[in-house]
Length: 294
Image (cartoon, rainbow, N blue to C red):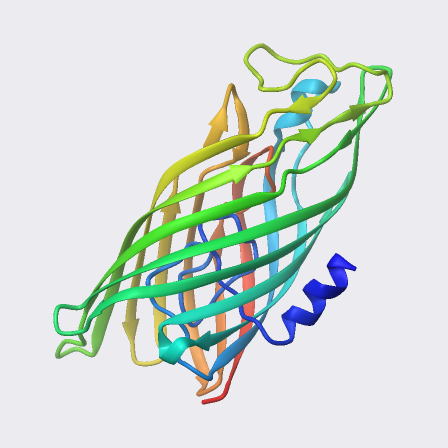
């Protein structure tokens, strides 16, 4: 029933992506994964589809016989809509992640409210909140048996501040975003067929495979430089880790975005996005967004 409600909401809501907690790409507002202080215009919205190739290594390899490469393919759909006379947006997304040792499905819902906007000074600020639920079917081969992996659900709250520079004589404009994000990761259970797991020193995991719930506060920064129908994007936020376990590794993306039609936006770039409990290497992504109501 809960998943049915999520699917129904996807028809009327929209995507916001606060600080790596939401793995469906944005386009018209925000950068790639990190948010800015802009919102979708009132009574308009956007539908986005994306492909992401992830690279890295599963940190839970420490509980198993050897290293597990954490690379795979990810497909996502999202939508968002502007509300409150252009001061807010709501969003929802779903992502399917395929790895060599199993799959994960991620449902996300979020909202963002612009509470300050001074166009004369080029300053604006927004608050956002969101939730992601991860359903997994992943199994690692461990000492004498298997380890069934569970991924955490996440709740995220963030504050962002934008500084916008107007178009200069060369037709170039820009936005710089700084902010802070709090993300809480729910507790999870890694179930071993042997009953217990060998835990490396310092890992926040007990012998029964229970991973502690953790909350992290991290800064975020993003930059967008625009010229005509082109945007050049970059973003970064540090890793969220404890005792050698990455609840989420550092996240950066660098991308180019092109408005090929007034209502069609294409984006391509590099990113270190990966699932929780993974050390990330650089991957790549492609996305297309269709705007409506304009």
